[in-house]
Length: 186
Image 1 (cartoon, one colour):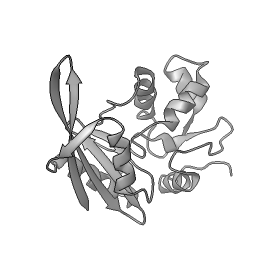
Image 2: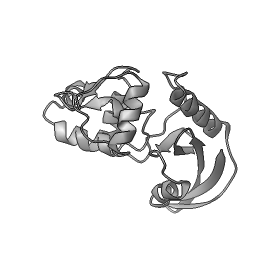
Image 3: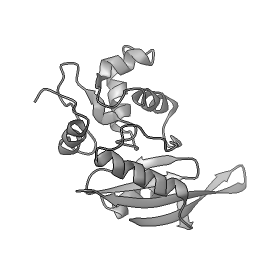
Image 4: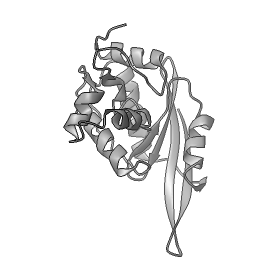
């Protein structure tokens, strides 16, 4: 397990604030990078994504300097490892949606309501958030979900039950669906 830490300088009306962001990764048949802030998870990468690629995500959000590891990162890594081992079906690690728009945050919060072993579709999510005609916007928000696996965008299928898309790649989506015994149309 590798753990790195960076502090982000955030300018707010001539006041500089520090934000700590920590990097880590698990290897469970695939390497998976994880990034947490002091508030919670902010990013989980796709299978075989390097920590350097994950760092590009954070670097695009601001300036960072090295810091120390945290229990939150360790817990997130343990929970992901347990999920991929088939031991865990719920997550307790806090989530920090700081880098999403209010609409994206609404969609991502709704994804958290889709239980382990179940699927939903883009239309159902749009209806659930009170925006039944925003199916494409919901799909875009789901595609931009930076916290895959724990914010379960892999559980969202097309209305006809097909895979649809997945930012981590369809083979990753298939693996996650099989982990949860969720069926889909090929």
